[in-house]
Length: 177
Image (spheres, helix red, strand yellow):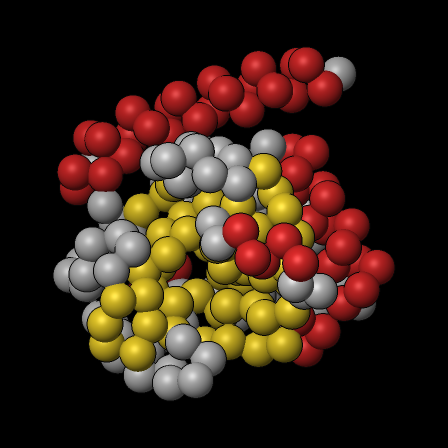
């Protein structure tokens, strides 16, 4: 069964890649710095942050090539810095759920190797969301609430096994179900 999931995941990813190349040159949303660039909020601060246990809800793997970001997909959006929410960086985010009011709930990704030893970071391996193929880490304790129109582009589909590993950690340590 895992082999079938991998084949389907790769097929979905190939479709996403083709769509991203054809729609807006691979970028969604309007304006803002290119992916990975730092600077002030391009949208006036639409992305909000909260502790993971404050936004705990149901989590399920549901990537779908319907043009909307879904749990299990990695998307790019502007993420505010903790120390100064008026500043931030465009970065990849794993969508884990939708809030009751419709915004996306996501966890930021980092390729910084020192995250490996941080208590609230979890390795999810490498994937097409990182052009250099570096190992990535997801931050579990800080949830991002992202308006759908603040998504710049879809980046990839997280493999089902890696997503389930994140879901298990959110359920066991942060009150998600």
